[in-house]
Amino acid sequence: MDINFALETFLELVSALPLTIELAVTSVALGSVLAMLLALSRLSGILALDLFARAYVFLFRGTPLLVQIFLIYYGLSQFPAVRHSIFWPILREPYWCAVLALMLNTAAYASEIIRGGLLSVPHGQVEAARACGMGRLMIFRRIVLPQALRQALPGYGNEVISMIKATSLASIITLMEVTGVAARIISETYRVIEVFVVAGAIYLAINFLLTRLVAFAEHRLNPQSRPPLAMSGVLKGELQ
Image (cartoon, rainbow, N blue to C red):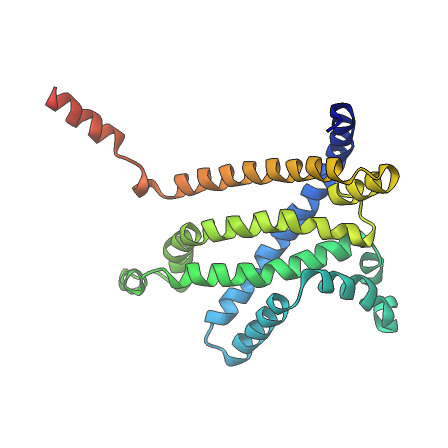
């Protein structure tokens, strides 16, 4: 591998990194809100909401993200009602079409992760909170949500990592994120291996940092899993 060329490629790809991160962060942030609403709809006991959430999850998990991006970017513009709506200034932009597709897609997967976390909370704790006089909102905020977050964090961390990699599909609708810039460099130099090795290394570095952040957050949210350092120190002193 040509080191000088690899370094030049790295510098060019790094310049596109902010767009990749912005796409992922925006999509995950908006998708988490929608995912929570979908998860609550599944658990609401209201048939209409439950069926809507089930259909949504089935649709977006059962079709490829690439197809969803094409349908949003190319398909919505085919409807005059969309072109004349107040949303057209947003939907005609490739960036917002990519964000919309990524957001809708991740919400389907994340909603099942969140639903599993909510279902993992022991029902006895909820009943005990009710016996103490807590309202439904306080029970959700103080009892259910903290435990559900701890249970859902590992799975949700995997979903965030998947979304970082999924941003590479935004290059097909002219967004020049890391993969888009890599494709442009390849079209100019025809050096496929070097460019994609560097691009892969960049994605690998980002996801390594994400895995460390998720592991740190999981460690902080699960104090019961930490070794009792103070107690172990006392015991060692007594043994000595």
